Length: 457
Ligand SMILES: Cc1cc2nc3c(=O)[nH]c(=O)nc-3n(C[C@H](O)[C@H](O)[C@H](O)COP(=O)(O)OP(=O)(O)OC[C@H]3O[C@@H](n4cnc5c(N)ncnc54)[C@H](O)[C@@H]3O)c2cc1C
Image (cartoon, rainbow, N blue to C red; front, side, top):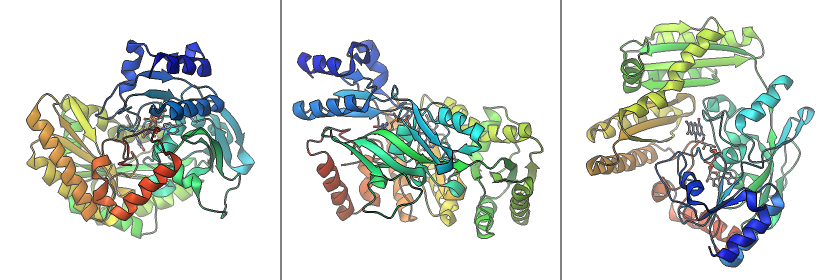
């Protein structure tokens, strides 16, 4: 990127919204994944017209552009692996409209998830996906990665809530997709194509989200198991019983041990734990579902069943789940967190298989995740300065992906493919599918300037 290009970028966004200062570039080399690469410059556009002019310029001079929200992605999607320009959308952060009667919120991409949540709460509405990074991640990033969260089993992921988008295509043209209606059966679904496209097909500049009335009655419980199979059978029977809990989380033996030993939490010495939450618009509705859940847990030999009797007790139970990442990360200097997903009935096969694989390579690990939608988060800790551990990690991750695909699963339930999983995409998609994906990329981005090097495109 030469001086004249940098000058043009300054003219587009203003001096104050451009930098090529090394000290400011360094943090933009990273997201929350294990990958890094420094960009040559960063811009903070404040209007869609600027986004369009920048992409027009990038095409004319063939430099790469990487869109970024808050950089909390776990698969390297926002790492500018081929250098070039980082486009930080965090200054486009206005909630443009909330049309409660239409069940819609219209936002710019840089709005932080929690800010929308706070704006919707007084209206009794919410945007359900709720990723654990909600206090910092942006809605643009959520749409681009199809983010999910612990409520996925009942409420789905971001994709289920995007009604329409405004997108600047890689060559600079601005388009609108979808409609302002709760439903539409009109034409090919371009909106869904952009959701989960990880900034490879266009830069999202406006999002029309479907919002939902918030169920205020919530029941929370935890249960322990001395046998992993009993925990797995409970998950299957809960879903079969017709109850879809708003959260159904599973913790493996290692997770419980680490929380007890490292985190000093008061947890029993057991093989597995389940955390369950039911919700409804009345207390009776949430309690009716929780009673059914407890019935199933008891039938499957659960011990130490704790039912929260207050909001504080519920928060204490959720603290167990929410602390895992930060406590486990203390075990080594580096860690990777995967988000492999299988049909719900295969969750125990996946958990057992992952345990065996990682155990073989002698690395510390924990496995936990959203059992209610078949999504597990194995987190493997390692020391990057130790080549044996680095190689062990690489092999373990590859074997985990192979196992997941053998079980009929998918490499990513919510974090996306980015850089981290790009080499493994052929395990899940055959060459016809991959070629179609690449043809679509070429159609949208003939000069391959937008977020190159991602998703094996
Ligand atoms: C502690 C922690 C907990 C997490 N928990 C969860 C979880 O529960 N569920 C979950 O799904 N994820 C989770 N994540 C991962 C991450 O928060 C999500 O993937 C989130 O959606 C990323 O948002 P972001 O704004 O940080 O995007 P970034 O990381 O900045 O970008 C992610 C991808 O989106 C693209 N992108 C960003 N903005 C745009 C735009 N406007 N137009 C086009 N492309 C764009 C980028 O190019 C990149 O490919 C977690 C991460 C951390 C660190």
